[in-house]
Each structure stands twice: as C-alpha cells, then as structure tokens.
Amino acid sequence: MADDFYGYDDEGDEPKGRDNLFLWTVFILLLIGVAFACWLGSFYIFGHPEHPQAYALLKKLKKIEAPRRFEVTAAPPGEFLSAQRLFERYTKFSRLELERENEELIRNYLRNYRETKKLVPYVTGRYVILDSYDLKKTDLFPTGVVALAQSTDFPQVLIEHVYTSAPRTVPAARASLQTGNPVKLERTNDLAAVVHVEKIADGRLQFTVVPLLYGSYGGLGAFSLEPPPELNMEPGLPVIKGKMLEEGLKKFTAYRTRNPVSPGDVTPGAPAATPAPELVRVDTVEPGQPVPETGAMPAVAVATPVPIPGRATPRPIASATAVPTPPARVAMTATPPPMPVSTPLAVTRPPITPLPRVSPDGVPLQPFVAAQRDPNMPNAGASWRTYAPGQAPPARAVSLDDVGPIADRGDVGERLYLRGEFRVTASGANRAVLRDATKPDDQSPRVVVEYPAGSVPPPERERFVRDSARPYLISDVRRGADGVVTIYVKEIISQ
Image 1 (tube, rainbow, N blue to C red):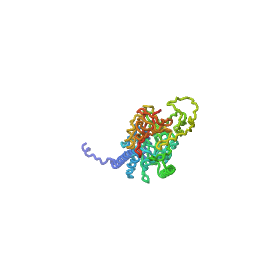
Image 2 (image 1 turned 30 degrees about the vertical axis):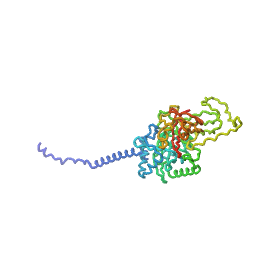
Image 3 (image 1 turned 90 degrees about the vertical axis):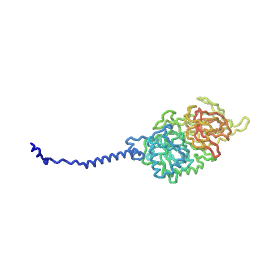
Image 4 (image 1 turned 180 degrees about the vertical axis):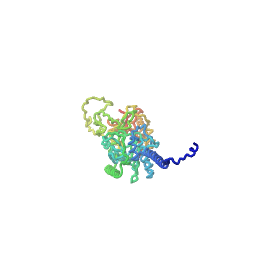
C-alpha cells in the first residue's frame, strides 16, 4: 500500500484551463473608465444647464424646473445698478471674461437663483424704447415681446427687455411698447435681472433683462406676463442682434428726426412735448396673498370712475387685452360749475346746464389757458392699485425737509411715502403741482402728483394735510439745474 501511495504519478491528469487574468484586468479598467466618464459627464450636465445639449437632456429627465415668478419680499438678493454703473462694471471685461460671466448669469437664471450666493444685478433707471419685436419659437424665449430701449441718462447702454406672455396678450403688449415710449425701471416696483451682456460694434453695451416679477402692466393696453414654461437654448442671447439691431437704431434715429424732444428725455428748459404713454406696473394680488409661481397673474381690475358734471367720463377697460380709449381732457374755465364735495350716486341725472358765455354784467367770459403739460409726467388715464386710508403696504414716511439727501443721491432706493401740509399751485387733468403750505414757493420743493384715471385733482389754492394714513408714494426725486428739488409722487389712497 505504501508503494502504491508513493508511486502515484499525476502526469496522466488533464491540464487545467488558463484564467485569462490580463483580459479580465483590461475589462475591469474599461468599466472603471466608463463609470468615471459618466460621473464626470453628470457633473458637467448638471453643472452647465446653459448649454443646449445639457438643457435638453435635463428637460427630458425632468431634472430642471421652468423659470418661476418671485415675490418682491422673496426675491433673490441683488444690487440695483444704474446705466452708468452697469457700463463701468462690464466695459472692463475681456472677451473670455464676458463669456464666463454670461454663462454664470444665464445659469443662475435657469436654476431660479437657488444655487448661487452671488448678488443678482438688477437694472434701474429711465429708458426710451427704440423698437419692439414679437418673440418667436426660434428665440430663446418662445412667446411674448422684446423691447429694445436706450438709457436716457447714459446713452452708451442699451437694454432688450423681455416681456414673456401668452400669445393672446402679445397685441396689447406691442401697443404699449412703441418707439419713443418711456420705460422706467424702479427699485421698489421692478426686478429687472440681467441675464446677458453683449458688446456691440460701436462700443456700447447691450443688456438682456428679464423681469423676475412677471407682473401685470397697464398702458395703451393692459397685459399680464407669464414665466416661460420652457426655453429654446439653441439660438442663445441676445435676442435682438445683427440686422434687427441696426433696424431698431435706424428707426429710432428717424423718430428723433421727427420728434426732436423725445418724451423719455429730461432736459431742463426744453419745450414741453406731448408725453408718450408710460408702461405702468399694476398690482393685481391682494397684500398678504401668495403670488402664483407660474401662469398668468389675476386680471387687471380697473375701477369705473364716477361721472362728474361738466366732465367727460372715460371709458372703462373691458378686458385685460382691450385697448382703452384715453379719457377726454377738459380745459379749466373761469366759472366752473358748482361741485359739492361729495355727490351721492343716482340712477338718473338731470341734464347738465351749459356754462354761461357772459357774466351778469354782460362781460364775455373767456376760458383760462390750460396749464402746460409736464413733459416728465406720463399720459393721463394710467391706472394702478389704490388702497383705503391706513391700508397701504408698510414703508418709511418722509417729510418735505427729508427729500434733499435723496435728490443728491439720485436714487430713491426703497419704497417711500410723502406726508406733510400742502398747498395746490396748479391743477389739471390727472395731475397737480403742490408746495409746502408752511413756506413760500421759493423755499419749498415742487411736488408733482399724478392721479389715477377717474380721480379728480384738488383745485388751485386748496390746502390740506396728508398724514401717514394717507401718504403719497414717491416715484422719483430730482434736483434741477436751478437747485429746486422736484418730487414725483403718485396718489395711492382711494378717494
């Protein structure tokens, strides 16, 4: 038995198969490479949604949401820049620096500013529209209107303001965004975020601006904006470029030739011009109520004015897309008909007695010359939200003595209310000029009040007090070349 054990020979066994370790090693390394490439690719796709292929893939995977509407109180933190500050900041950028900045601007917009700590650049100031165009499906924003505008304070800056809306509201938007019409971007009412910066051939800068509030506007036609449900990243930005940009500049040059004094210009001592319709933002959501993140805002509600003897009644706006008829303007006469302070409404009214043409002594009565229109004020008939006394949104109230530093700073910077004791020095259709009732005219700032459609401005020489429960909303404060401070305010308290 021992001999058999030690005499065992395994030479007769079948040879073992090869393990192919080299091929398995190569295969595993390839799998590692593929996994690493997928890992890097996912970082690139999620980190650069501004690229068309990445945006399309994220859209299919439902990993990116559409742009949403913000509330003023919950807007992304940012810095409000005038046209001159925008030019001074971005004109120093090189081509590569500007490309990186543009990628970051549109990337933050696509992410709804949730993954950035950088301050959003918001545009403020006064602009005049050069031209406007309907947005097409081949543009980055598929529907709405884009308006090309130039700064009235710093003409080296152009903006293309994108108004994204449903196709049914495009005609009303185009009616309000005509060549020569002024556009004012305010810190308290607008969140016009910069999403692209472009250097054009003549050295000027063109900024693409999107209003993050997507609110409602009133002008020649009332319309509401909507966040775009999806974007077309292929054409990129700017929307207005090349031949379209040249046509817009030429169109405005021709307009300036026909109208030497543009309604958007503010030139001391310039002759008064018929003001163009201003685009007025209208609040349609009750204070404290949530603002819808997507879709259209509630319809613009315009109150029907109370008929007043001796004055034509403006026609109310029938719908959000209808173009209202401007109210008739009536010249002030030497002997106005008696008007009680509060006239009760009645179903029927007696016929209006025509005004006498001669006095009791037989002297012919001639109407006074109508007050000259202020070129800086928007057209009569604008509408905005009004509040009951004491129900206006909370804000800091200032007196006439506190507006000097604001005029020197050149920017209101916040929502401000004006209170004080006033005296009416001039009154016309939908506006009045006030002075401090406790001081002579040459020692008092000039207050220009704009009233909503259907309101009756106070008559000349009337004195009244506006306290914190019935303030005026300050829209602008300027100091003229003669040193006189002019305060532009709006009546926001329902009468």
